[in-house]
Length: 130
Image (cartoon, rainbow, N blue to C red; front, side, top):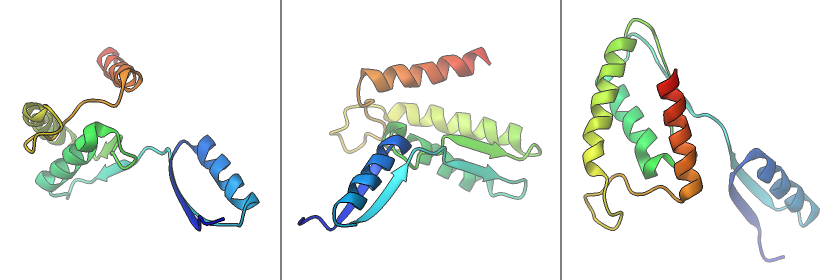
């Protein structure tokens, strides 16, 4: 085969199938970026401005539809209230950057499709009920 390497991003189940197929062909090199929850851990001695900046932008990058989006943030209790306040303010600030993805000033574009929209809405509804 002419293909010497496969790079795949997706679910663990799909990644397993890619790995099996690669092994059955010519044992090509495979790089897999699979599922995961990409946690951030923030301790009391953290630079809060830096932590909020990286966690808000990292989560919102590509409308949160990337494998590196920080989907969990674990914050030490001593700074949690202040961190939450600053993170909420950052998210509100970024809400002004939702627009047409072809415009240079746009930071947040649309979700990929209806299925992804429904998934995001379920997360929001779950959070509201908690």
